Image (tube, rainbow, N blue to C red; front, side):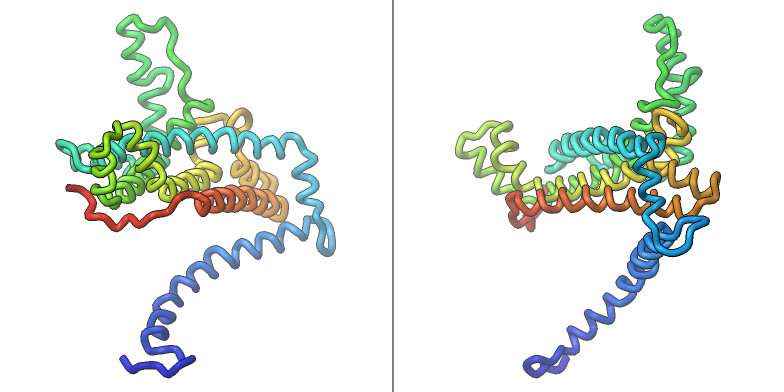
Length: 294
């Protein structure tokens, strides 16, 4: 590499830019352009000329439509909290390795390979009214009537949890395992009990990774569609904002209105992400370049 003169980019800088270009092009083509085109389309309602906010006004003045925002939050927020908390529990206890940890990890992340549709079918077959779970409880005399665990709020939550727990668990396990064990050992040497070590030492170090995991799970949960259709009540209790957008696009054939709903969903997702990032920036940050598991 030749040394660059002051103020001029070096060959290494040009190489870095060249390597970034495909990624930037990917983001522009598959995210920025569709999002901007969706905004443009949403501002041109059917049977109207020129730019108008009529689609947005129609959404927020129609109770059947704007209630989908609250329903989506009721699904996304509890699911995010449960997924992140459960992932943290498993990852924290497996951070330094346990017997059969590779086998346990494989079992925990197995749902990733199943896909949403196959996972939903499995939940219907296992937790449905005539599924194995209910039949077992009825056969043992524990229940007199089967539990209603599908085609409702619980079914959607089960599906989202099984979809999102594996990658959240892997993310937190990698983050926690990277924290230098000597920090934790020093706290124990000074007499801190396990709860104090977690609360006063480890949690501040884990917090930035925890915030990002929370953000990713929230965004995925907020955009749920297949789970809400197959395991919920898509025209009732689990009619999410994604279902509302789909209905306008492919049932009412009103793409501008569907685009407006999609833009509203994207704004709520970006707002949630921004809030989590701002919170993350206020958290204690520290280097996590430790030696990992020992």
